[in-house]
Length: 129
Image (cartoon, rainbow, N blue to C red; front, side):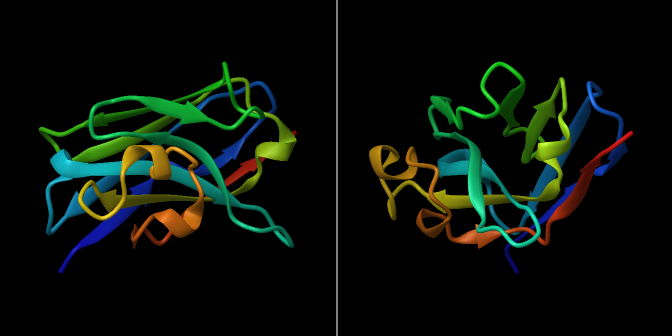
C-alpha cells in the first residue's frame, strides 16, 4: 500500500523554525515530482513548494527565501525546512507526489494540488506567541 507519513509539525513562535518530514512507503520517490501544500482554516489548499524528479524547484511567493524543499531518495523522504515563520504560515501541511509519467514537470511545477496524486495525512503547524 502506497502512502506518506508526515511529521515535524507543532507550535512555534514567530521567527522560529521547523523541519517537516514526509516518509514514503510502498513506492520509491525516484521517479516522482513531489510537493508540500498547506491548508489554513476556511481557506483552500495551496501549493507551498514543489520539486521535480530532477530537483528543479518552485515556491510560492509568500515563502520564497524562508522555506526550502528537499528530498533524500536513499531514505525515501521529503523535507520542508521552514525558517522565519510567521503567524500566517499556520496551517495543516501536506506532502504529495505524482509520477513523472503521469504529469510532466511543466504541469507539476504549477504546484497546484490537483496535479498531485498521492497524499499524506497532514501535520499541523501553529505559529503563535
